[in-house]
Length: 291
Image 1 (cartoon, helix red, strand yellow):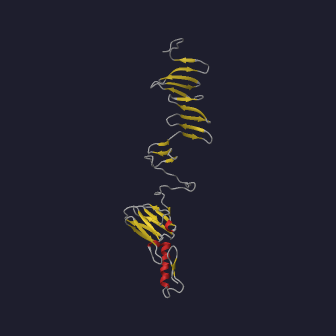
Image 2 (cartoon, rainbow, N blue to C red; image 1 turned 135 degrees about the vertical axis):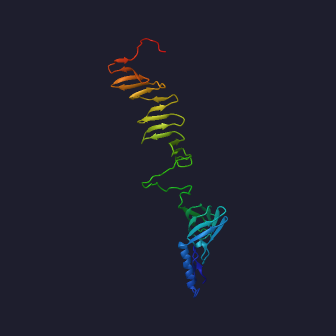
Image 3 (cartoon, rainbow, N blue to C red; image 1 turned 90 degrees about the vertical axis):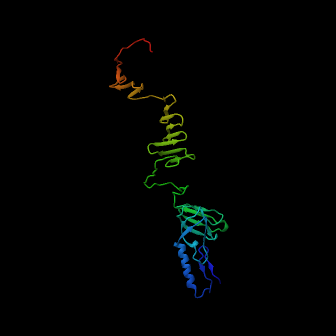
């Protein structure tokens, strides 16, 4: 009975009564194949754009290693064909070249191991329709990383650098990058493509409308709104001092010792107390004309 071989590593299984006196040689070779499959590291030098990674039954072959360290100087993306296409394979691949390495085994799908990336590569050995999949350690080169659950920062910070453009160091929301939060090295920014709402648990606190008003709310009721003419206030305006801007000669309304004081250009001009007594520093004209 002739020898047969294991499906994925090509380890020889001598037939009954075969290889009399040479079992030691076959067994030692098998142990070497097993050792290579468990912990073997291959430095694979890539050239050009194609490479074949072959596992040959009963032989110590390149495809039998567990770890592949890719080197050399490929002239472009190098396609590595895992051969034969009916063997299941799992490789730990470190791409030390400056080119992408594409692993293929059949028509079921290929994967790319980017320059500088380290990844697990699994080939399903499904024959002509075999597919290759990847699990990467490299989240820097992974252009579409995904979370399977909530991100726990483990008492650490998420740190952003100074943003120089819309493509770096920004926290963005929305399918069209509708909201961005960032620091530009000098100032802090919140950019909104539409209305920016600040809400409480069940009420509106403020609205910032693009090319429009700023609205401030109290207990979900709008109280202050900017307009093209100035400010619209709903309700009572309270304050200790009110200044009417008049260049360097402002009018100021203030309260001191329960008295209303009206000043002009820093000098008090009128005083009204709680009894209704009125004092002025100049003349009082009744029934005059206002220019």
